[in-house]
Each structure stands twice: as structure tokens, then as C-alpha cells.
Image 1: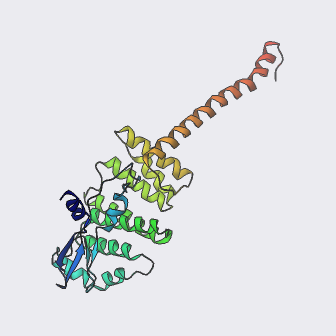
Image 2: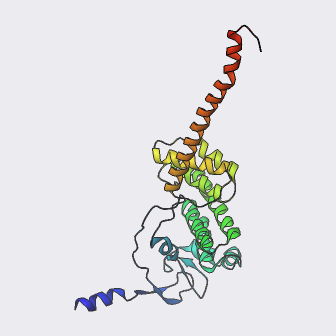
Length: 261
């Protein structure tokens, strides 16, 4: 009986849903519960099994192209947006992988519903899909869209982070990953974190932006690079003082002997 229960737990679960837009009925796999393992990336993408599972929490209706985590949900705005030419254009962007297209479509619906923060996160998930497929151009396009939506969310007092400093850290990471190094450094430098971890992340974002480094990093990387930079700066200051003293010493000796240099 125990073995049967274990086999039953491994059977994929399915749900029958009717599309909110066209009423077409389909069966969809239900995602398994996953746990994030290890540190997330600095743009909040989780590690472990959840790294991929979070990207699969989106569905597409094969009949009308409606994309959402739950196809049976939605209001009149959803119906209007899905039937619009703009949505159908996003639905067929050839440069994006199919999974990224789904997230971009869902982001478009959320934006039209004035859910700018949620739309920003959906667009960021599209960027993660493109990262995995080694597609830097569409990844940058999706990140640029996320930046615009998060900035719009901030303008209308929609939060997309736990605090203003964490939002700045996220924006700085997105800007830097998109190659907008000057703005990334400015955003990271303007934040006032009240948390040591956030202060380290913001310092790292400034450091990487100065280096014009658009890589993907975690908190461990931030702590390491900030520490190395701090040690390097201290080493340079210490050696600078020593070099200055050695250069001044002959002048001092000459002065003691009454000879001016």
C-alpha cells in the first residue's frame, strides 16, 4: 500500500479549465510544489528546482492565445486585450522563445489592467527564459520593459519590493544587466539602505557598473567583490601613504642639512 501511494504521488496532476476569453476547454498539467535552494540571483530569481518551476506557471489557450497562470480567470479587460491587435503582435514576437512569449502576453494584460508592478515581474520572467536560451537581445528587451513598468509602478505608489532600498537594488541590477551602467550606478548610489545586506548589494552594483560588468550575480558574489574592492582600496591607500613618505624623506633630510630642493 505504501509503494502504491508513493507511485500515485508521482503521477502528474491535471486540471480541466475553460478559457475565460473563448470558452475552449483544455486539460493542463498542474505544477508540482518546489522549494528554492541556495541564494537567489540579485534580481530575485530563485535557485534550485524553483528556478525553472517558477517559469512554468503560465498557460496559453491554443484557441485564442490567452496567456495567464489560470486561464479560467479574468475580467472584461482581459477579453478586450486578448482580442486587440497589439496583444496578437506580442503573442507572435518571433525573437522570443514560446515560453517567454507567454510571459510577455501576460505582462501586457497586467499593464492594461494598471497592475504595473505585477506586469514588471512577468516581463522579468520572460527575460529569465531568454537568459536560459542564451538570447541576449530579447533578454535586454524584456528587462528594459520591466524597468519601465517598475518605474511606472513607483510613480503610482505600487510597491515592487519590500522597501525603497530593495526596489533601488532591483532596478540597479536590471539596468546593469541591460548594459545601462551609468543609470545603474546612479540608482544604486542614490539609495539609503537601513540594512547591511542591502548596503553591500548596492555597493556591489556600483562597483560592477563602474567595471561595465553585466553579469548575473548572487549575494555571495556581492560580498566577495565588495570585500576585495575594499581591501584593494585600503591596500592602495596604505601603499600610497608609504610611497609618499619615501618620496618626501630625501627632501626632509636635505632640509635638515640646510640644502633646499
